[in-house]
Length: 300
Image (tube, rainbow, N blue to C red; front, top):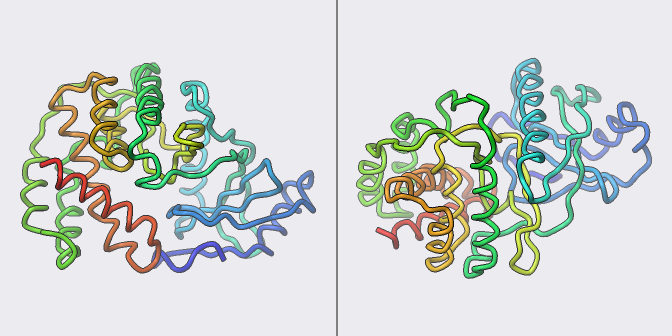
């Protein structure tokens, strides 16, 4: 299996189930080798079919109709992302139906070769920082067509996350200076907005970026592409970069002091939950959270 038990509401799917679903719904791919993809992902179980196709199965139990609606939105966003971004991204190919014991819709997309980044694999690369800033700017320049951020997830109001951050701080007792964490969030949550929404990837974590010899060569998980706080994609500066490349990214994007602080705030909000939530089930994600928090503490 690709995943151990990561979530209480997790749905597992075996290779045999994947083979049967592919044979039924994608007959042109029947008989091609199916291989589980191991990685730091937390929302999907992923299998590769041959060398050109990936199938993604939602990992958490939910109402099938709601999942279908979400996957349709994500597919549309992924198609738009490919038009907006100069970096390679997967192309959506198919929306699959439940079957063979798997209860939810699922998706098929092109497979991109390359290695996923880690929190430290490119941290000192100014070339990578240049590529990352160019991609973020490219996304920011894409027309929102009058759309604005909707909902209460990352990318809207920082104070909407007070309850979650409070829980994360309590859960991190013994791992981090939780009083320092509370002080940081007390300042972050009050930061005002000065910039209008721009188009953002919305989840620029290491496992969603493909790299080769310090170069950014691909972007994954593009279904969240939407208008949001322009500071949201700045989380990548703390998830991936050390001091000098981080400042280079800031300069390239022309971030104001306020926008930069809000980027730190979103990185904190995302990282605070990872060390405790994934401590025993996804070590790569837990380590990402620890690395990001240490960088944020060092930047106080």
